[in-house]
Structure formats: C-alpha cells, structure tokens
Length: 185
Image 1: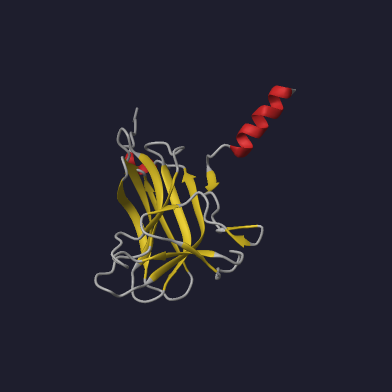
Image 2: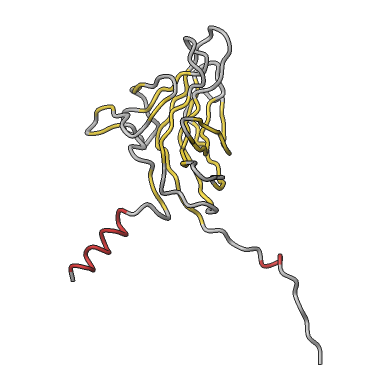
C-alpha cells in the first residue's frame, strides 16, 4: 500500500506530459516572486497581468539598456528529454520599441543559445506559442527564455511576461508517409 502511495505521488509531481514552468505567474501569496528565474541583465516584478494571471508579471529590459546585453530571463529545465516535442506558450507584451518573445534555448558553461521562438511588438497582452524540440548536445541544459528585446543605443524598452507554460506533446506519424501495398490474387 505504501508503494502505491509513493507511485501516485511520483506521477503527481513528476514533470512530464504537461508542466507549468516554476512560478509561471510570478507571484506567491499575492506578492511578487521571481524565484526560479535567472537573468542576464536585470528583471523585476511589475504590477500588471493578463486575465487569469493574478496581479504580477515579470518586466525584462531590452538588450543594450545601460550597457547590458542581451536582455534575457531564463529558467533551466533539466528534465527535458532529447528528441521530444514541446509547446512553449506565454502571455507577452512590449512597451516601445523592442520586439519581445519567448524561446526554447540551451545553456552550456554559461553560454546561452536561442533556439526556436515566437515574437511580438504588441503593446497589449498577446499569447505567444512555439512548438519544437530542444536541440541538445552533450553538456547542454535546456532552458526557457523570455527575451526582453534587442535595442541599440540609449533607447530603453521592456518586455512583460506572464503565465508561462511548457507542455510535452506527442509526435504523431502521418500514415501517408508509408507506401500502401495492394495485393491482388
């Protein structure tokens, strides 16, 4: 009986077919919370959220703001399996002028590589979504990246993110990929 309880708990908390990125709504007990996220430049809580997102989101400065480049916030997801498909989605908006987005990525010895992503310049909450594999090599750790945009010069802008979700999806084989054989007497 104890084994059954353990297995039930394991499957309940095991990252798998559908998983919210830790602290996907950037709050804890109605207060701002950026735990489990790391950044290359700076990030802070911002009191704005899309419907269903609570009260807080994360504000990410664009790259080259105050000499910092690039403006990424990321979270490591070491449970990612190579050669599996995932859908990454988030609610995002940009104040002027950056193009902001979400990306699959990887980190190796502190070097971040952007993989597939989706972007917007919308000044209102917009849902972004991208489906891909994480292309991982030996030593790589999968990460989810919130991209605050890339801006040259002194102009400043921010990206705002909330309700981040990562979901493993099943690959389906197209039955028309295989030749159809017909046998006649």
